Image (cartoon, rainbow over all chains, first blue to last red; front, side, top):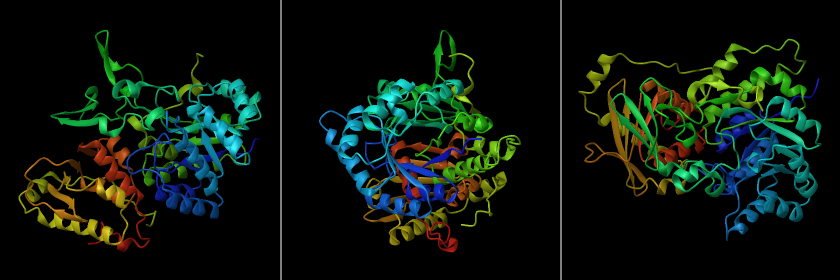
Length: 335
Length: 151
């Protein structure tokens, strides 16, 4: 029986961080209040004072703090990203999560003692890419994009000594992390450039009789009937007319939920399981952290008697986007 | 807050909305504004985000009571607007139970939004600022002093 993987939970604010710590996270991940991270939303994230307090709170309770600097430095402003790395080191975070190769190089040379993780935005799906990051930048952990089957994740783990972190719960997108430009196609801005997918200033929710219309920079993304669940206003989750049929042409609004395959994830040696959702509220962080902690703890003594409690799935289904959950790529039959 | 106490999802009977709709709307406007100003006085709201609220018109509609409150933020204070003369910059509409679940941090606004229990219309970015501002507030531990509930 392998050791239990770490539970890595999102924190967009100090109350969310405390909720994660208090409900059983082994680590929290967070970002600065600027475009050096991919959840650069108005009013979200940490200034240095809040972050220092958050780090104190987490460390006092034995919880690690991982800082995401996972956007790509923009022309003429590379210094801003390097300063963010320096600030993270000064604050004493346990690891910095980086995506950009230039920034990984800067961090590895300037702060050789600092633990570095390769962000999902770094788009490393093969052990060759991960081993390169280890050799060149001493990366200690890699977060895998959500495109691999469980067998492929196992193959990666068998061929690297870098710790592997996978997503366990949260909203799904088209999962072309670090390489997706759909948001830029619609509004000229994307996570890679400004740190936000489909930024709020481009989003309009229009209430019409019997329906709600979502527009992204004027483009009609979806029209929800009064009884239909809604999703985030991104291009990938829109319903479009394709060859005379209107449907979710790219993907349905849905959330990833790996609770049912936790024993397999543990068995193949995954080091950490990440929960998506730094943009969500403390209530979400509480609910998801508590549920996954309970599910993981039930596996501490072995997986022989593991069964998925309906209460866990009900709690996770409630907070899911589109009110439905999937195993995503982990169990798809094709490769 | 006691995590064992949970607010159930409920909907008040329809006749209540038609009844309350006929009553003057100023009591809940005053209560809401007093609560927000109490939070201001306790320095619970961040200065940077407050600047984005200046002169914006907000409307909070409680669907199952028929109640509605409009307010604005000007010169460092939230102020009720009893007879709005224009469409609000940001409008919320939900049943009472959804608002109570939000205030108690029992449910996340995205969850309520996905499930169509909370409607947000108007300036989406302003909505995000308000949501994230309230999420970041460290409410005092003693529930009786929650400024938005106790007024």
